[in-house]
Length: 72
Image (cartoon, one colour):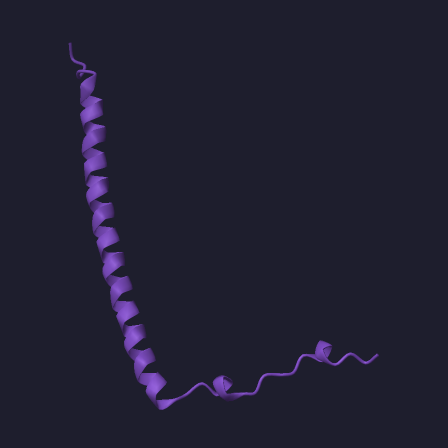
């Protein structure tokens, strides 16, 4: 009886799954923190830049529609 019980392989797989889940949880935590930091940086830069530089597209007059005056 030198062979291991049949459930030993199952415990080894479950242990590997536990380690993999911990590693993936840490990875997800790092990605979430990075996303939050980048989002806050973008929001802070956008609000600061909006005060100093205004969008010139906002003040351009709209083009008149060519179909409003048919050439008939």
